[in-house]
Image 1 (cartoon, rainbow, N blue to C red):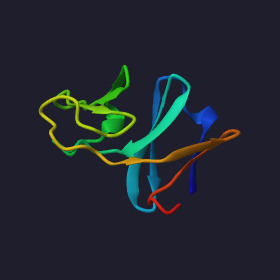
Image 2 (image 1 turned 45 degrees about the vertical axis):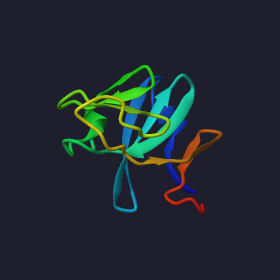
Image 3 (image 1 turned 180 degrees about the horizontal axis):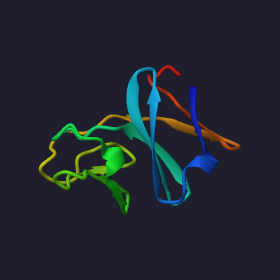
Image 4 (image 1 turned 60 degrees about the horizontal axis):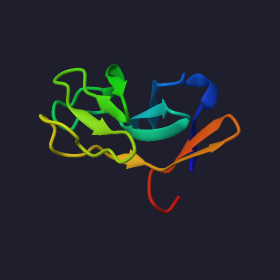
Length: 103
C-alpha cells in the first residue's frame, strides 16, 4: 500500500485530490470513513475534486452525475460507467491506498 495523505489533511465531509504514480485520485472523508476514487468523471472527463459530496456520493461539477463513494458506481445520468475505486487503510494519522489488488 502507498501512503497518500494524513487524516488531519482532510476535514469531515472533505475531498482531497492526490497524485499517486501518475494517477489523479481523490480521497474522500465522510462519516468517519475514507474512500479513494479516480479524480475524473466517466461522462465528462472533468475533475471530481471540484465537485461536492452528497450522502455517500460525489457529484460531478459539470452535469451533476453522481458516483457512489464506496464503489465508484455511477448512480445518476448522464454518467453510465463507474469510476475506479481503490482499497483504503488508515493507520494512526496516515492514509494508505492500494493501486492494485495484490497490495
